[in-house]
Amino acid sequence: MEHQSQEIRVHFKNSFRGADQNLATIDGLWQTSEANPVKMLIADSQSHTVASGTLMALEEVYELVIQSIDIDGNRVYLELYKDGIVIDSKIIMPANEVDDTFIYSSPGTSQEIRVHFKNSFRGADQNLATIDGLWQTSEVDPNPILIADSRSRTMNSGTPLGLEEGYELLIQSIDIDGNKLHLDLCKDGMVVDSQVIISENEVDNTFIYSRPETSQKIKVRFKNAFRGAEQSLATIDNISR
Image (cartoon, rainbow, N blue to C red; front, top):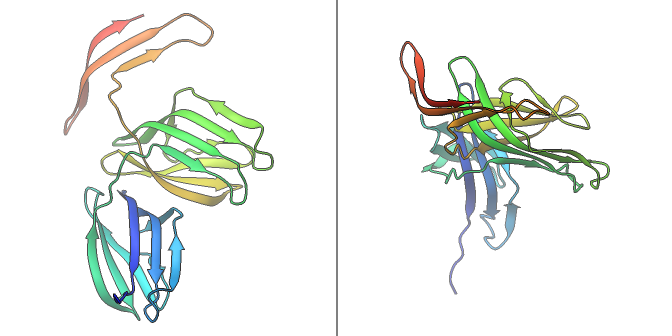
């Protein structure tokens, strides 16, 4: 008979390096017993956002900690402790696949809050993201649709996006490369969920504006962009009205 050994398995969905906080998303955590390997101690497939430096308590006096996330925000350095002593360390590279929609349901309900991010931007003096889909059903009765908005809007980091029933969505940080967002969802001022979102950031080279309830249209096509040490530039090759 094949001997079965204990196993601790942690799956990382993405990683994030911000100006003031480093994070990783775990969406799978399994642990079997050291004394009885067929006994499952932890089987958690929920998504959790974990900050670098935070000890994650496991069973049988094990602890896992994200010691560091690399400069590009794509690799995670982990250490596993047993009784306070490091017994293993690894460098993990999550897939960091595009995950451009924030989705939340209040526990025990079929409520849904869904926010789609089109792109994100990290500037010298402000961080921004474009939202082009916003959907919310009620926590009390999921049948009424409280918000169904497909308009494109720019959201500023640090300025909450007000939703219904006391919810607010806040961009806490945008990563060094400007491609990943750390989001907090608050209910009545208390954080109820945190997620890292990776927007697709597809090429979108034309600014288009139409004044509401008119047939007016302003269209500006951008050919390229440039960021220098002293100034930032963009080339426009078409303007129409």
